[in-house]
Image 1 (cartoon, helix red, strand yellow):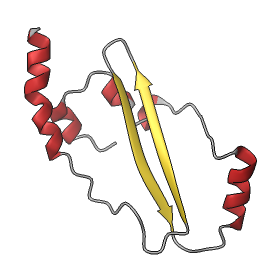
Image 2 (cartoon, rainbow, N blue to C red; image 1 turned 90 degrees about the vertical axis):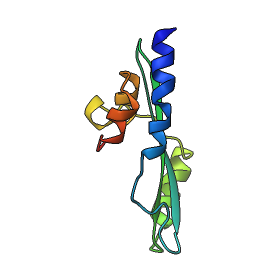
Image 3 (cartoon, rainbow, N blue to C red; image 1 turned 90 degrees about the horizontal axis):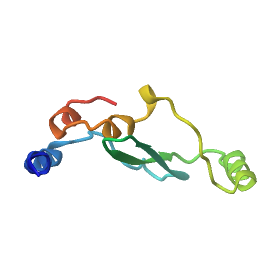
Length: 100
């Protein structure tokens, strides 16, 4: 129970996390949603972000998505997976200062 009380006391720190980026560009021609997840014996984590592209010749992209039915599941190594640090039980204070 003491562990939960400590974690609960640190949860308000998550409100301090800021990502100084725009979510969508002006007049997006394509919007993608990317998700990452990871799990360990300590915790599980998930990260989702949006990516947008300006108006260009997006025909190639749409054909590619059609062939793949828009689904992509791939393994991402730990150093590149933003959900990895969460699954290792990172504290909110460590998460605030993490650049990944």
